Length: 398
Ligand SMILES: Cc1ncc(C[n+]2csc(CCOP(=O)(O)OP(=O)(O)O)c2C)c(N)n1
Ligand SMILES: [Mg+2]
Image (tube, rainbow, N blue to C red; front, top):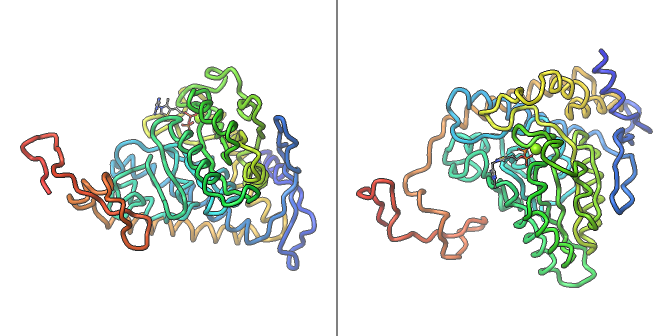
């Protein structure tokens, strides 16, 4: 009861909405934005019924997809590395709601949620996890390497922090390609974890982005831990939005999809207007352990995890808002969730009917002739004269 009350308070009081005749409501954002060298955006957000239902749907799909992936991993159907995103869903959804598909996204190995909101289907994500041919990276990337070039989603990077300079490069290309100096630019967001925030390459990329006024957002998903190490044990500065030093930054509640959306609109506007980069800290929490080999409760207590689930859960917050604004009833939401659960189960079943790629795919997407293949983003592959196998007598010749 107490937990439910807390969520109700966090939902913020809707204004202007009444069941039956209003489709839009204004919500107070209960956790304050904080600004570093800038005035943060207002503490309110307007949202329509359709928007909130869309956010709920995507976030719930991510949650169920991750829970199903956990089961498939334990059943040894998914192999290798697997990092789950449940708990952090509002960040992916909030960014996507603030951006267009002309804005670039690059993120860490914890990339399933971002892949989904950038347009990959649940089935294609499952196929990738299973290493199957119709996966988002044709079964050759796995959990950490999901891409979608057609929606400017650049992955999925296994090396901690390595995606950040690439994100700065993507921002550079927006500035380089703009026709007039006064044109508003699309932006690039380089996402990284608290465990990556003190890496030299983050600072090197930020230095160049500030020097050249690139439209790059340096976005730290602070889920309080890097593997099993809490932020207080790894970082001198734990207010990651201030880490840009003379680069401005904002703090956003990463458990509130509307706060993420409003905060990201504000940052996109600042960076896209030629003011240079901005730092963002998105405070969040991961429900699973770091990866599938980490039960997640040796360095934090079960109570800590339970408390976040009960008081800050991002999906519960959207549901509260839908109900309090009179947009949906609890029964309607239950029905929606039942259908979404089935959608995920059906997608998993269909994915499992697929199979691994053909051997001939071993050498594709490595070297390219540079020529486009059809209308999609894929480039024609150039076959090397020999593909070296662990047993040299079995080298593949083309
Ligand atoms: C350069 C490098 N060093 C170490 C690792 C091993 N490693 C993988 S994830 C991780 C922790 C990263 O934590 P954080 O940035 O907070 O991201 P989170 O997993 O919390 O999303 C480490 C040390 C790696 N992949 N790359
Ligand atoms: Mg972390």
